[in-house]
Length: 340
Image 1 (cartoon, helix red, strand yellow):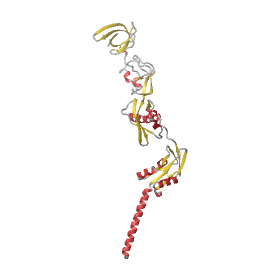
Image 2 (tube, one colour):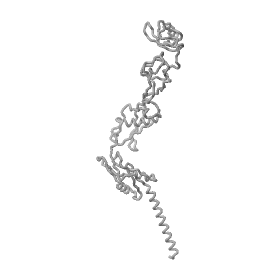
Image 3 (cartoon, helix red, strand yellow):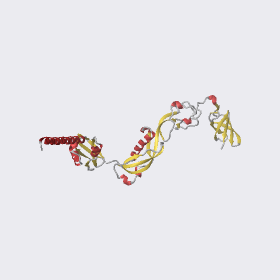
Image 4 (cartoon, helix red, strand yellow):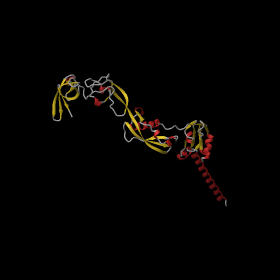
């Protein structure tokens, strides 16, 4: 082998070696992106502890990140309240799992105190909490404006074998329609990523309304003032009118409203009544024409029990029998009662 050829051969080997070294260093740089930040304390509900339960893992490669997070660091003794896991122990476990020492970078606490707490058993309260979240999203309201309660026990209706499994989770599907009152929702029971059961549950859904409530019984002839009504928040199973004081005060109701009832727009007369419009006053004697199909008969000795305008229906009383009837005012001292 002559000298020029030997020199070129040595240069080629050196170049290849430098290339391999460069690739190796590049690979180490990529692998070194696995950062493990150890927590000082961690609470676990199972005896198998993955790295993700006690540390935060960062890596530019999502597959390597997930692979590292899923490494089982230790199998706990559930009879012990807590255990301590050191960085050195975790490092050894990761090397055994196939990771290279030079690929790993640790930070955070030198060791983690792991506290074991058994998974809480399923409760109806958990079901109601999940249902509240679902219904607030469906109705587009704030959680404090809604009450969602099971109408009957749900957990006790599950198969007995599910009661023995720790760590079960609920998932409640959105309602088929948005409504208040009794609402049926589908409740799924999951164990990690496995769907174990789907059952229906009926919830009582009530929405908070700011309503006007009659303090006393309201009658047609008396204008409403602030001593007659109060405004309060009530959780209702139906939608009701939320009236402001300026929509109620000074107006009269169409018919009697009992004390404690919610006053709604349909209960109010469309216009305030002036005394000049009243053609029948409470206590007036009324001549009543009773009509039944083609038959007409006149009834006397009838007394008006409330004021009324032309075209209004008011309560009246037969003074002879004491029986109350309702008739339509057609003129001063005159009314018609239509019989079925």
